[in-house]
Amino acid sequence: MSHQREHLSPVDAAWYRMDGRGEPADIGCVMVLDGPVNELRLRRALADGLAPYKRFHQRVVDSKRHVAPPRWEDEPSFSFDAHVAARTLDAPTDDALQALVTKLMNEPLDWARSPWSFTIVHGLERGRAAIFSRLHHCMGDGFALLDVLMELAEPEGEPPTPPPPVAHRPGWLAEAGRLAHDAASVTAAAGHLLLAPFDSDTPLRGKRSGRRLLACSAPVPVERVKRTARACGGTVNDVLAAALAGALRRWFVEHGAKAERIRAMVPVNLRPPDVPMDDVHGNWFGLVLLDVPTDLAQREARVAAIEREMNRIKGSKEAIVSLGVLAALGRSPAVVDHIVDDLFARKASIVITNVAGPRKRLRLAGHAVRDMWFWSPPCGLGCGASILSYAGNVRVGIRADSAIMPDPGAVARWFVEELEAVDRGVAGEAAAPTGA
Image 1 (tube, rainbow, N blue to C red):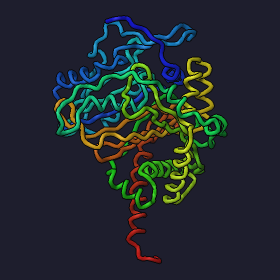
Image 2: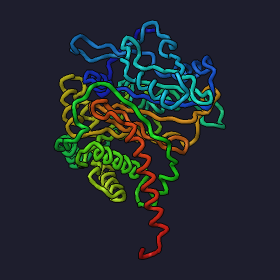
Image 3: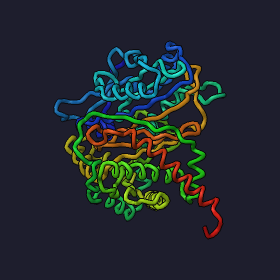
Image 4: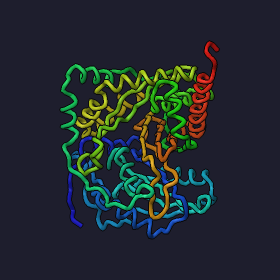
């Protein structure tokens, strides 16, 4: 193997350096296969699928005292098997799987190697197996990394296809220049992002312990959410975000706190749809501030408030401005600390990521991928919510610091209950006679 070296992009370097704040900037994903697996065949499928991506063969090397930018270099004596482990659950239960994944997510990454790992988990219910993948954010954004994981498999009923070529396309700086031609809009977006006041002082903004807790909701049919969205006059994303707002409101009340309105940091994908993860632009997304109506008691009012916020964001250049800020300043550790404090820890209380996954089931190593969910990093905050739709269902993964939210499973359950309650409410209105 060659010893090629190149600097991390400014944005990738910023995400690499966020690790020093007690909350590793890594992404975790679970894929449940519909049956026991031939481990050798599965390892071969994973290795073949990742082979085109150079980043999965490289590690990050930093200079002493962070004087020079960190760089990518080929991992010495790279071995795919060194990144892949196998575990067997003590009991064939969802709780046992959750406990194992939580344990793995609290283990430090080995920076002597490329910052990713796979764990093949045996012993689920009915002999099923799962794959838990963990990848650091400096390799790429969650949208691109999830695309890579999904490309390891194939849609059911379709023949295998070779992995897509890793493209070298015009960068996001060129895209920023194209989008940011309207100086007034850019100035307004920068003002909203940089000059927004500190967020409400709620239990979500306490001191963190550094220990992560993970939870995942039960699956909810996407068609049910679509039906609710049509009845409310909003979008699927509006309904999902409003349900999360309702779950967080209940969490505040349960913990004896005032249900104040909070702000979320929301990643927005800026990667063109035909551009896969490449070796130049690992992170190609922006961040926007979203008001979360946890102060509103009525569910339909929360949906309407989220819809108004989403419409504001759609007309804003806030996402591309935030990407430009990180691109311009992300090489300095001191500046990264300042950005994290001012944009994340003080101006928002939670990170909400929403990803639309494949509509059809995937197959991997001869088995259908029965289910999938993930957790993105909270970006220096105490809590993050990651919403993923897959094969007709949607789930939310909650990732929280144990000192901030010792019961993330409650928020995951309430998210489902809020979706069901809104659905019942709008269905009842539709069925009610005029004037009722």
